[in-house]
Structure formats: C-alpha cells, structure tokens
Length: 194
Image (cartoon, rainbow, N blue to C red; front, side, top):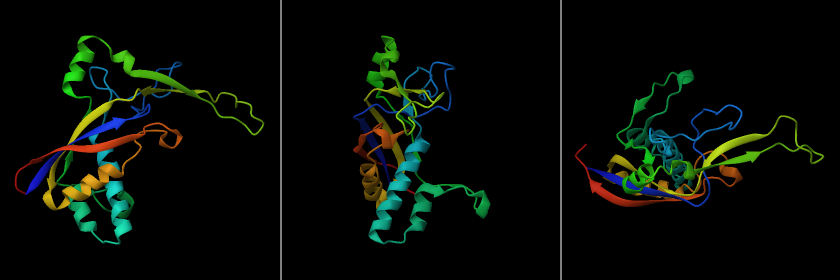
C-alpha cells in the first residue's frame, strides 16, 4: 500500500529558488516563476532535499537501507560510474502557493509585491568593496507553499515525514540567512497498491 502526503512549507525569511536567468543590468539572479509570475519550488528540488535528509537520518541510525532509498527515490544519475538514472516510486509535485491565495494574487495583479531585490558585494581585507563585485538577486518574501509526495510506501511514510522536518533552510544562500523554513505534513491520503 502507498500514501499520498500533502505538506506545507512555511518560510520565515526571504528565499530564492533560482531560474538560472538574469534581467540584464538590473538583477543577476531571478526567481523561478510559473506562467502567472508566482514563485514555486520544483518537485525535483524537494525530492533532492528530502533524499539528502533521509540519508542523513539513516547515517545517524547506522542502518544500511540503500535498497529502500533506490525504491523510493530512484537511482541518481552517475555517468562516470556507469550507473543509469532510474525513477523511484514516489512522485514529488512542485511546491506552490495554495490555490485560493494564488487566485486572489493573480486577480488583483499583486505578483510584484511578492518579490524584492537583495544586493551584496565582496569586501577585501581592508574593508573596501572589490571592484565589479556588486550582485543583486531577486528574493521572495516569506510565504507558504504547498506540495505533495505521491505513492509513498506505507513502510517509508514515517522516515519521509522525518526527512521533511529535518529540512530547516531551502534555496540559494541558505548559509547567509535566506530560506529559513519549517515543513509540516498536513495530510496523508491512502493511494493505490504497489
């Protein structure tokens, strides 16, 4: 049997999940946005963070459960070692603003109020800014996003939930104060058989 898990990410600080794009001279790093210019976190990003958290939890418990990790998360691609990528049984949806709030923001054209820019520069040993080191990134204000993990095997539900709780920061510049968050499971629904 499997379970679908719905979770909510509550951000307490500004956060940045990058698109890989810039806006020329204005911003060096833009947020990833959907077609309505709303922020989201790709499911593959969440999947990678949860997998890393679960691996950390396993390492603390001295358990050897690599096979279960492959079953749930799949095989990570590693061309150098000749390992092919394979899909696990779990599917991670994108984490997005909930539907009611999303509709209100879009209907009232409030998307621009979700973002601000953050500037930083490199400082040399004498306390002077390095030439040409000014960088600006677009960040999203603290908000809540919802996502789902589909087809979680029942025997793995508890460890996935612990993995979600283990994640305390998300996105770029986590070590500089961005992306502080809490992730909570808000619903478990029975799915189909495996």
